[in-house]
Image (cartoon, rainbow, N blue to C red; front, side):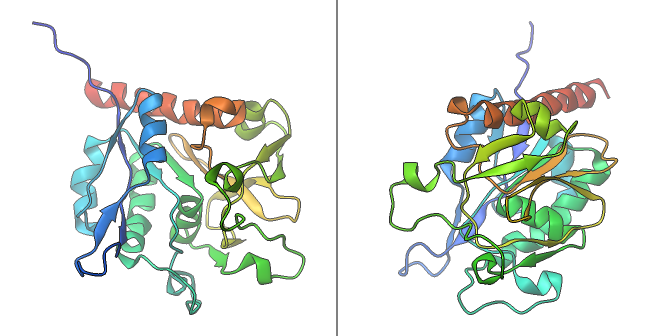
Length: 256
């Protein structure tokens, strides 16, 4: 009897939040839009909400891709030699896991895609640093979303990104300039080791990177391509390139 081929499994690390003041244990959460985008690409999102650093060597071999999602929380500043701001919403459990998960994914050749916080995690995991409040930096734009507005307004295209000629980003965009959304307060200050900046905001902020010499797909973006990706060809092509790499990984893993 023929077996049904399963979809590539994509690890989406959970965020950890206190959503109910009457429940001090907290919640492990994932924004549906990431899972919906992964599913629309023919992939299967998976969560390991209690995963710890020591679990990465056991769990990573069973997945075909890692998607580091955005989050309301910031990467804790101690990971890049700074002091957290009093206003920071932090998620130390996620930080601890993803700092290892980034490096392990690259070592094993598992396709890796970082979105917003995920890009920042990639950068910090590889030794880079972040601006903690871009809107307070001289010469920088305010990259935050307009608070209190409907989500359609918050996730609407906000500014151009300039894309390196000949890069995968330019191929996905069909040119060297594209419009993207912007919903972040932190941003890349010093690039991590092996990261190549291939997309920049008009103020010079690094908004898209690739990992030089990575054995598989390894990119990060500061914008949110998961948001209504079917309406935005640039977002859609980016996600489909990630999906294609995950399918290739599954084929290699099953053939091993």
